[in-house]
Length: 311
Image 1: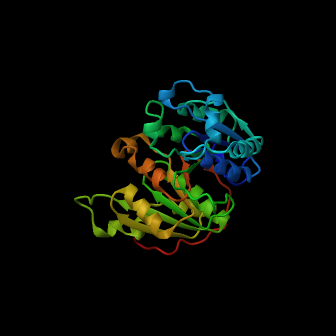
Image 2 (image 1 turned 45 degrees about the vertical axis):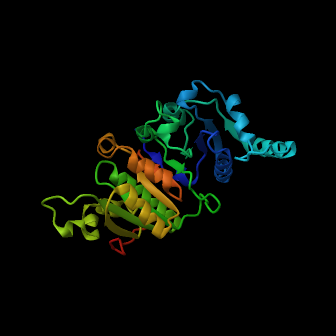
Image 3 (image 1 turned 120 degrees about the vertical axis):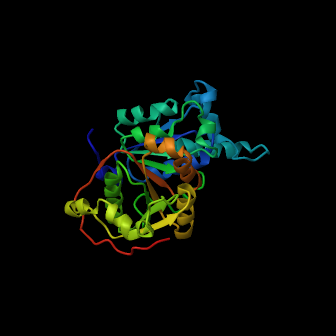
């Protein structure tokens, strides 16, 4: 499989926005406005809910002009203004026929999407898409997946501005290309990259020194990245606890602009369930980038690893 180009991340030509617009149409509008600022061609895919059966775009569009939770009827003029606003935004996008969630990877591939943007629903994925949603499907999307959860702050988000990046890691297949992308992204934005490793239960034959930032650094594929010139200054930190809770607590304390997560692997899902990935997606106050497939990178200035700390 040909690796996705990192250049396509910060200079995207095609972006696929995936949203169940009935869940939160205002947030979908804000997301579309933000991604249109990249100059990319934007495709909007409304999702079908499993229990709705086949639902087309026309049936979903009345939600775009609803009164945003008010129990009293909105004046016709406000509905018209809102409808015209949507028409203006969507006039610059290609609105696709609604589809099921499991069709997203193939659709993204068919339009050569450089980035897939997922506007997460207010409720959990399994409640909205109990039959069709499988978080493992995100791992089959070849492009990076940018996720805006229900708590994401869109007011200050800018695709070209990122100063602090959190990269929680789990040792296993895929870590090298995920770290490569994280370092390259941090270098591009002149951002601080924090690598976080969460230890769960202590092993019976595990020594305390094995749970230190130095030990974590020794297991990272840093040597190869140095040779490629894609390494950036980073902080390595460790903590103990349940991964989902530890990641969210750490992010709350530090307030990062972006979280990078590796794509879910079947073995990890069997061990941890969907709670870690879904939990971070649902509760984080900043956007999340999920990297499941290798991303091609180019040389960047080599700089030393620094600021080794523990949480």
